[in-house]
Amino acid sequence: MNALKAGAAYFLSVFAVGFMLGTVRVFLLEPRFGAFGAVLIETPFILTASWLLCHHWVQRFRLPAQTSPRLLMGTSALALLLLAEFMLSRYGFNRAFSEQLGAYKTPAGALGLAGQIIFALFPLLQKPSAI
Image (cartoon, rainbow, N blue to C red; front, side, top):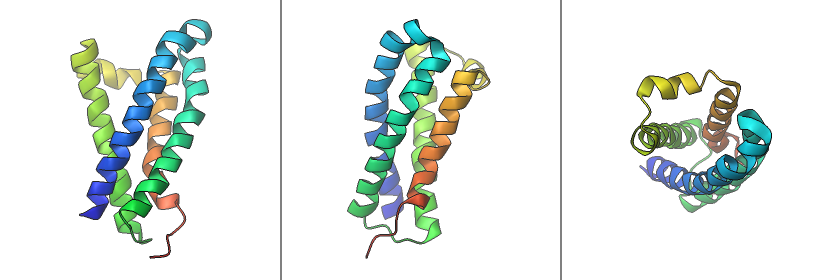
């Protein structure tokens, strides 16, 4: 149960950071560098924040170093992130599910998806805590 709670906390904290960075990306970076360039600039920042937040939540929820709780934390966080992304796409931007899926076929979308997969793997890659 702690792994699911950690995954939810990890998702919420990274989503909040991502929402702020996404605003900067869309309004400041995309007009100047294009969609791919903007995502390329944003990705190291969001992944750094994700790494630090992941470490915090792994420690806070005292997750053991075993693979299964770490994998559960990462996959639950990814599932929540993708759900939030699809909901925001649908209800915030009035895009169909198929349009959102199609966005992953663009270079910017593929890079963003790769970043999300890395985000999901961070709990597995964190140094085991001394619990």
